[in-house]
Length: 392
Image (cartoon, rainbow, N blue to C red; front, top):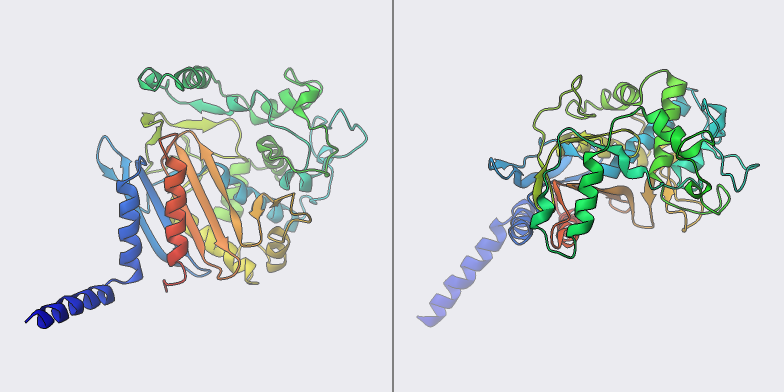
C-alpha cells in the first residue's frame, strides 16, 4: 500500500511538472518577487527580432484605485529614452541633415566649447558616446517640472533621509518650464547666466568617458535645428510612426496619452511631471509599444534593414572603441548585452538584448526609492533572463 501511495505522489509531481510550461513558471516566479517586494507595479517582456514571446503586468498602476498594471500601461522610461535619440541621430545622418563627426558649433546658434581646451572641437559623436567633456551641472535637476505641488510626505519618512527628500521636494516644487535651448545656453555658453568652467571636465573632449544627460539634450537640440522640426515631431515622423508605436511619446495637452500609470516615490504617489528637455529622458511608452522598438533594433543587429539601414544599425551598435568608454550612440554595450537602464522619480527601467541569443528583456517599474527596490528589479531581470531561451 505504501509503495502505491509513493508511486501516486511521484506521478502527481511528474504530471504537475510537465503541465507547467515556461510561461507559467516565469509568471509564478515574478508573482513571488512582486509579493515580497515594495514595488507598486511593473510590466515585463521578452522579445525576439520578430515579436513578443512573453509579456505581462504585475501589481498596480494605481494602488489607491486598485488598477492593475498591464502591458498597455503607459509610464516614463527615464534614460532609456536616449536609445531613441541614438536612432534619431543615425536617421538624421541618413537623411543628410548632419554628420556625426561634425563639430556641434557647426549647427548651434551659440558656441559651446570646453574652456579648458578652447582649441578642441566637441563633436556630435562625442555627445552620443559620453566623451564630450560636458558635465551635468548643479542646475540639472531643474529639468523636472511637476504639474502640481508634490505633497510633503517627507514628514513620514525616517529621520536619516528626511532632510534630503525635503530639499528635493522643495526644489522640484519651485522648478519652472523654460525653453530647452535657453536651459542649454544658460549652462554651457560663456554668455549663459549659469556658465562656469566647472560645467566641463578637466579632460579634453574625446579622451575620457563621463555620463552626461545634458550632452544628450544638446544632441536632441541639434536634431531640431537641422530638421526644422521639434525633436518630438522628428521622432514621431521617423521612428514612432513607422514602428506603429501609437501609445508612445511625450505627454502634453496636445498629445494626451491614455492608460498612464501613477508614479510612486519613496512609497508615495506623486503628480505627473514634464521635462524641460527631451533627449535625456521623459519618453513615455508601454511594454507592447517599446517591444516593437526593441524587436526592430534586434532585427537591425541581425543584419535586417527596417526603420534605418542595416549598415546604420551596425554602426550604431558596434562595440565602443575602448572598454572604458561603455557607450556607442547612447547605447550601453558590453561583451554580453546591448541596451540601457533608467531611473527618475517614481521610475526604474531596464531594456537590453543579449548578443548571443538575440533575446530582449524589458522591465518598466512605476516606483522608486523604496526599500530594496533595485534588488527586486535585479531579481525580475534575472528571472526573465533565465527563461528567455525556453520561450518560443
